[in-house]
Image (cartoon, rainbow, N blue to C red; front, top):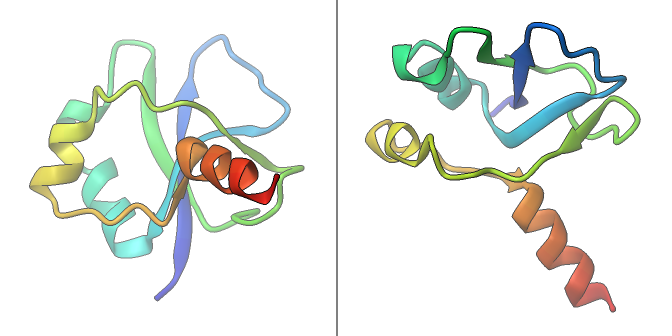
Length: 93
């Protein structure tokens, strides 16, 4: 299973790192990013396999839950996210 990150791409925002929401399988990323509900007027969700595990390339940002229905309807399994990173860091203390 190839792992990729789903990230937020938006107009007028030039972040030095990808603003990643989730690490998922490539198959799940294709399902998410082909769903019409995941794009707005000046933003959309995209996916990439580049820099998946490199924090210099991507940073996880909080998920506000607006795409929960899309994830649930497509049966997406989130492999990593902001919350998972926070929980892992807290358990390491």
